[in-house]
Length: 88
Image 1 (cartoon, rainbow, N blue to C red):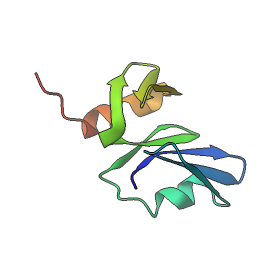
Image 2: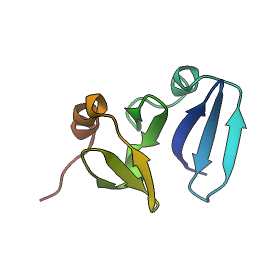
Image 3: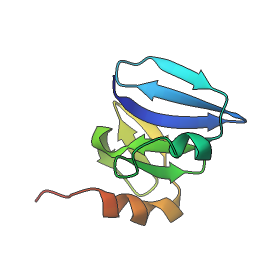
């Protein structure tokens, strides 16, 4: 099973999987991120981390993952762009 994104809500983190299932753990986003491979996940918002491999579109203010629009804060845009390889 592949993790697609992590979304935080208060003291809980929702772990969204590629098969559309979701697990909720009582952990902060920061603590959950420490368990994830650094080269595969990137923070795009204070409440959201995504697996780079599952991003289908990148825009200045959001990314699209499996047809779901996730918000992206301006301060995380450059970090995301450093992690993705653009094919021309």
